[in-house]
Image (cartoon, rainbow, N blue to C red; front, side, top):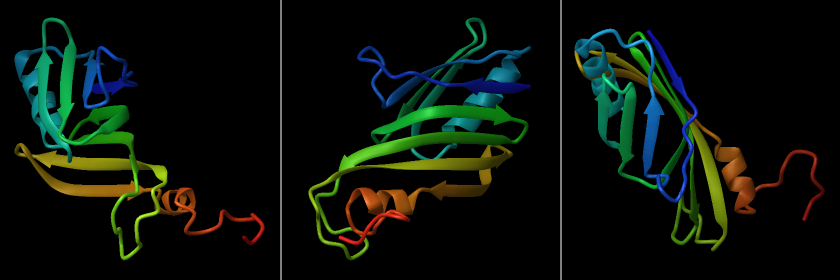
Length: 142
């Protein structure tokens, strides 16, 4: 079973909620397994999968925009981004007041209904460049 979706966020479905179309589910245990996998992903507040309609609804606890979710076998992959304003100290860096977006990819391996391994990557360099804290490669000195 392989599930892939590029969710869209609209006024009807804010970034904190993603609706997915999931194909290939053959029984209630398939939908329950996918629901458990989605619920274990970092930042997910709740996940509901409906076998009859082949739809899923995922709510996030943080203002995360999900660009893709892929579930296959024991793994759930989430690719997305978070946008905000740097208003307080971060990693010892005083607030800049600038808006920035940080992109991420989370890969979670699920066993017995629990995340047993997690790999995460985020674009820290791009984030710091947006805040004006480091120069982009090849850009002239300030």
